[in-house]
Image (cartoon, rainbow, N blue to C red):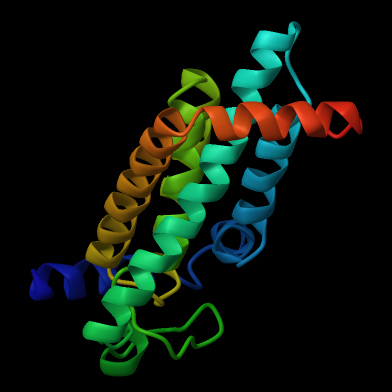
Length: 193
């Protein structure tokens, strides 16, 4: 897998500098802000949307699941990073770094875990919107490989962790449904839900 990882990074990174349009697109995508902010705005929009009280409640549960999933995925990545350290591609390969040089472990990709956690949380309730977030998460991962900060297996590992974190969060919220139901009642009383 290591040879395949290296070959894919070298191939993708070899495209850097070939097209200003592609480089500019990847600069936007690789950013630590574009995808997380867009995903967060989607969750915020869901929090306040819904034609009926029941639909709004389900959307608020989706937002809650997304937030918990991000926490779970970050915790899982932190645990793995404490046990295993993998150098970033730019450390051992001759590549054109198209991003700032992160110093934490390359595997698993925390960015992918967060993006796929949010996408999965939304997909469980809203297939099209979740599909769009999956697409954005995949492009974020591709941009990070293109830019030389992750190997493809880092992205795949992060994606799996994020999806599992969202499924665990959904199960937890379903199991403890009485808690959000009562908390959301208080939120509605003060007009924040």
